[in-house]
Amino acid sequence: LRYGTDLALQSGARLDVVHVVVPHVPLAAGPDPIAVIPMMVDDRPQVEAEFRTWCETSRKEGLECEPHLVDGDPASAILECAQQIGVDHLVLGAHGHSRLQELLVGSVARNVQSRATCPVTTLRALENRD
Image 1 (tube, one colour):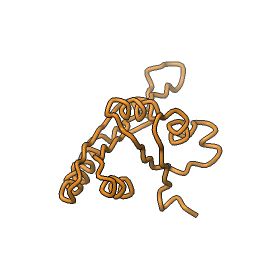
Image 2 (cartoon, one colour; image 1 turned 120 degrees about the horizontal axis):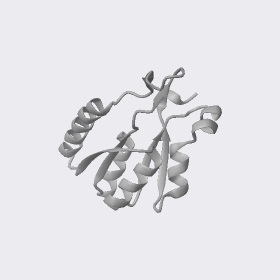
Image 3 (cartoon, helix red, strand yellow; image 1 turned 180 degrees about the vertical axis):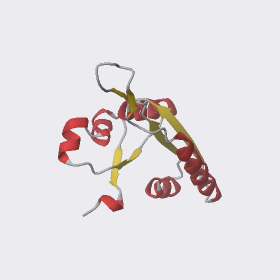
Image 4 (cartoon, one colour; image 1 turned 120 degrees about the vertical axis):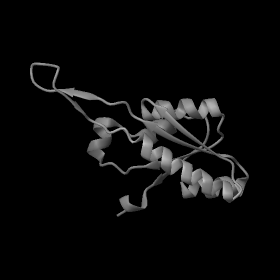
């Protein structure tokens, strides 16, 4: 978020912060589909609180900031939100998954980069760097 905020401040742009909430994906175990285990935790309340704090701080720096929480497939939801907002540049955080994870589930950042109609900057989180 810091890089995107700094970029927006330097260019006089508005900052739209997007987080995609992936719907719960139940996993049925055993012969009865009644045994369901939620695979993902809804992090919406925590993200909303972090976005409010981030946008309040950004506004104090003179930056227009708008948070967006959307549901769905991450890459598709980011691209759809970007189109609705009319962004001219996307800045994405990459999780730095292993090659096996990327092979199995794909890379959201790579998917967005290949389908976006505007420039995309992808950053790896500092804790994921070797």
